[in-house]
Image 1 (cartoon, rainbow, N blue to C red):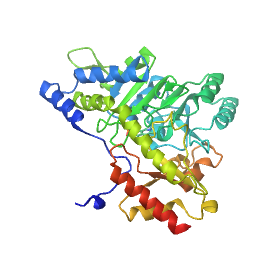
Image 2: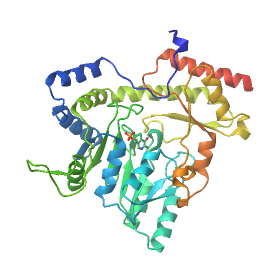
Image 3: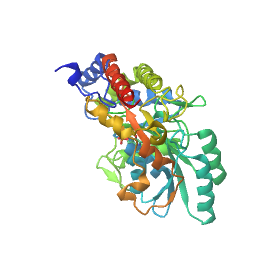
Image 4: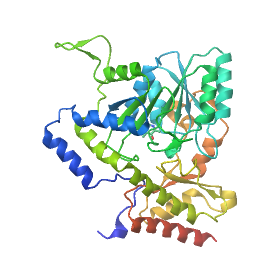
Length: 380
Ligand SMILES: *Cc1c(COP(=O)(O)O)cnc(C)c1O
């Protein structure tokens, strides 16, 4: 197959010899079914990297969110504030517990939860006597939410924060690592994330009791008795030792992979630098892990729409994707309560995620940038 025929993926896995070495070593060690030393080490290494005391490796980021919410007692009758601009897993985890998500809009510049809107919403909910169990933030596309402003709002209302850091491992906010904010946080190691275990996740927390409870529930809530004793409903949510070995290799390469994504983002920043009506939403580039680079195109000023560029690139075998469709527009959440400013809907309309993976070769990045330049030249 010619290089030009290969699809340039949005965010494909980045796997090399180190990963092969770690997985083969785990396989040869016999620790296959399913716990083992790589699992324990993976938890310790991620906890050390993020700077949190406890880490529980799980089968997905969604499982981590579910157990974090159960760990703070979320259940029927509770309300959990969720950003409307996120991947559906954030909101689904709330529903799994029986609690009700309320969707809040984002800051138009970053796409992350709007702290002012949150303050108004929490005041409103508390005046109504609603039982707000948590604020669940998402660190969108690898930029931390504005915790410097969000945490004081949560504290004022006595509501714990849970951080969906599924997209943000390696990012920081004011020098603190993504995954270290709030009562508990979730990471994802899905195949398209900043690093992967092919599928997996991790719950992070400073709360030993919450971590122990998550570990218990993740193993079918099995009590220590030979005959399989169970006093409550549990889940099969543990990560396997083999996948943890893959994760350990990926973690060793995390900084290198972030550097690569940052370089890809820099390329987009340059190509769009003087283009009227186009911006790159997100936080501080140096604090973000640059998981996915998106552009937002104001069609009035640019004279073209994001989807026209998407079509131009698709014809050149380059994968792009619209910005997440906000949760309050999803049929499954029709009728949910919202606090909206219009920012998320606008980012959905005007946004486009561009190929951002660390496995992209220089030739592939060139192909994307040339495709963009060609498109822009055609519009001038
Ligand atoms: C990927 C993702 C998740 C879910 O992680 P999985 O490991 O796929 O279950 C949750 N929240 C956000 C914001 C994500 O991007």
